[in-house]
Length: 305
Ligand code: PPE
Image (cartoon, rainbow, N blue to C red; front, top):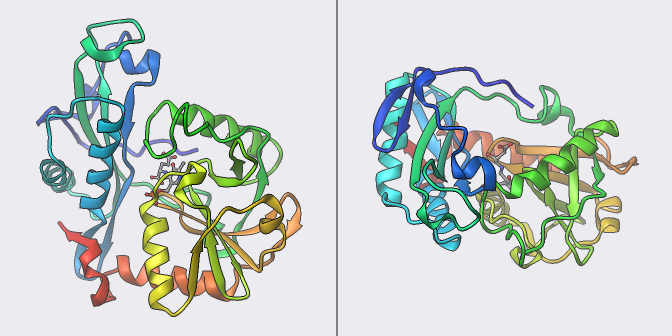
């Protein structure tokens, strides 16, 4: 989807190493068995400096992901926050994407991961619009995937694990092969879950709805932010199960995610939703104001470099 724009240094197990030296052995456990959890975070350069959006909340989610898969993590959320900030500073980036990963490294094979070491790394690099340059303005067309969302009792959506993203990749490749910008996955029950790398919202008669966590979706921080922003703007926001026809009949549909930000959806399975609607536009506007440091009441979500 995007080739990496290289930066200079990677934080690895408490030290900075040169970008090119941040390698791992081909027999690392995570490469073979998907034993890794990670985060995606954005830092926004703006008039006041550079601000990371919901940094502590992302690191807390990483700690929870590791805990849920019984992967011992030596670092606290606070230590990881500081490591991320140092990594941005040493790379002298104003705006960037931040990718912390906790993974089972080299030293043991076999499905039981317990005797493999746990390695931690943080990479940062510039990452522009996730779903293409015109996506934020014009929206994208999506298709319901023939792949189901991995089941909550097999590979829980609540854990941001590398293993889960095989499912995402299958759905995204299929969607693009069919000419869509992104996939929407239904869960095993047939309820709408999420995009391959985004949460989803609909708007109908000015009421926002998004699938509940119990439908097996990632507890997205952009999702959480949009719910709070929308309520502050006076909208009713519901977490309720959605079926595919709720998407077809919506006034507006949009994705949320760190990489995708707030991306409007203009068609679902070739049913036209249309140009980005007023609620989507208002929320996008608010979101970009917040990350630009122009909405003091949401400064609680920003960590300045
Ligand atoms: N669902 C999934 C499956 C997902 O991967 C993401 C983020 C979200 C929802 C939204 O979560 P949040 O970022 O906290 O609002 N996907 C990350 C990785 C994307 C990638 O291609 O890699 C991201 O947006 O950083």
